[in-house]
Amino acid sequence: MKAHEHNGHGEHAVEERHHGASGESRRGARTAEQGVPIHPPVRSVAVWGPIAAAGALALFVVIGVGRHMRAHSEQERFAQQINRLTVDVVNAERDEKPKDLVLPGTFQAIKQTTIYPRSNGYVESWKADIGDNVRAGQLLAEIATPEVDQQLAQARAQEEIAKVTADRWRDLVQKNVVSKQEYDQNEKAYEAAKANLQQLEKIQGFQQILAPFTGKIAARNIDIGTLVTAGTGNSGTPLFNLVQSDVLRVYVFAPQENAPSIHEGLAAKILLEEYPGQEFDGKVTRTAGALDPQSRTMQVEVQVPNHDGKLYAGMYGQVKFLLVDQNAPIVVPANAFLFRKEGPQVATIENKDRIHWQNIRVGRDFGDRIEVIDGLKENSKVVMNPTDDLREGIQVEVKSTEESKPGNTVAQSTSTR
Image (cartoon, rainbow, N blue to C red; front, side):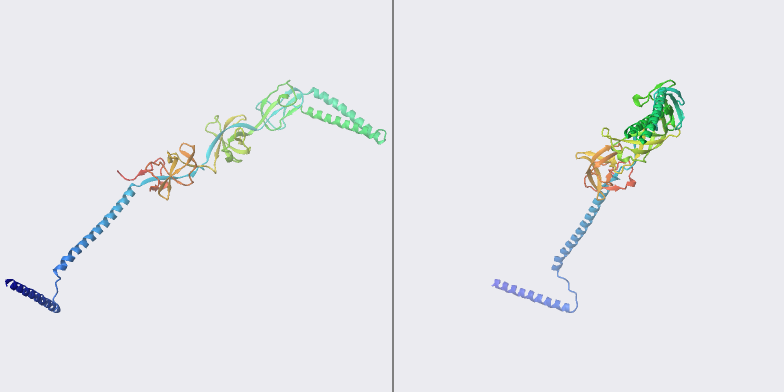
């Protein structure tokens, strides 16, 4: 009975709450209709409040992370920039700078001869001595030729007899007394006697020794009474040595590698130990145009004016040429390459600021420069004083050639430690 009552009271309470809620709803509706603000339910605030807070927090986190990443990226770029290697570079160029080529040379007179007699005899007199300047055609000596004189007298007699005989046979052949054959034989005998006479007359004319050209007597090998023999070389007796040295020839032998650069008209300087600090101007007048197969050298003639007579034929000196090689090899400074395990290499700049190690083939060593035979193009940018910090492909800061100073250590970091 009590339980029933309790249920009854419970149902009644539920009905009352239901009616109450309905009543509140109706009142709320009336309030909305009357323009009074409606407060959100407490349940909605509890749900959307944390969501909004979380969203704001996430936004702040994203913004902060973005700023941090940008700052980190900027720091990395700054670190890379501050730690980037600075290098000085030079252009790999051909060694077209004129080079001195100094060769030993032998001096010879522009004209030089040894005078021999053309007839046998003995020296009757001499008119010029060592060091005398003589003119062309000037009398130098007289030779007495008694044998030639006798031969000449005999030749004159034979020529006269032959002439008379030929004239007589000419008259007889016209009268048909003798044959034409006999006449021709006598006529030719006369011509032979005449030619022999003329030859001996010329030989007798060589009794007077005349200077063949203007010059200076370099040697006198005779004296009065010296017996002389006609001929040259070992068979003849040398009388005088005559030289003309107002212009001297200097002969040098150019090596094969320099022969193409030496040509007619090329200027040269003559150096002598007897005249220290003084140079004599010369010029190449001719070249052999071929190499000696034994020495692989080419003979070159240089002529040197010698109007003041300071230079002498037979002297020994040096000839200096200033040569420009159009096909000169590429050269780089000696401190621009390294011997590495790959062989000789140079650090070059590619793509404006990237390091590339280039293999090269080395030629001659000039001390401060190295000749590059192969592996390097002309005008390539080569790093001076490369170090191990220059790894393949790294980015570097390249200093302009104008800012580069020889001898500086160029592969260095700009960062301070």
